[in-house]
Length: 64
Image 1 (cartoon, helix red, strand yellow):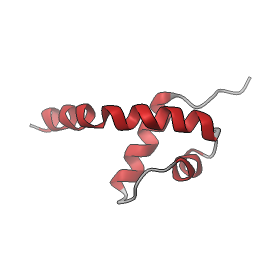
Image 2 (cartoon, one colour):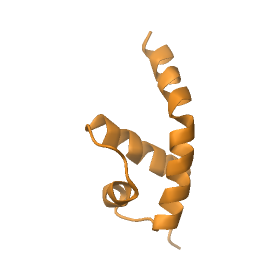
Image 3 (spheres, helix red, strand yellow):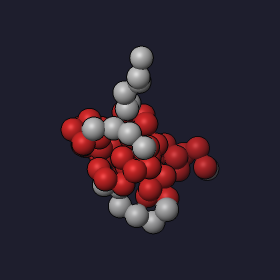
Image 4 (tube, rainbow, N blue to C red):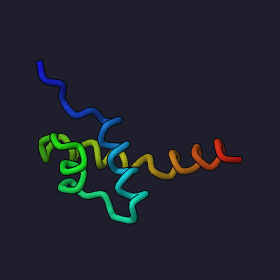
C-alpha cells in the first residue's frame, strides 16, 4: 500500500528548499518529494511556517 506524505516529510523538504536559498512553495515541495497532493502539502506547509521559529531556536541550541 502506498504511503502518504507526512508532516515530517514536508517540513524536511521545506527546510532543504530554504537551505538552498529558495522559498518553499507547494510546487517546490511536491517536486522535491516527487509526490504529494496540493491539499496535503498545503496543510503541512502551514504547520511548517507556524513552527519555523521554534525549530530554528532548537537548531541554534543544538549548535551552541
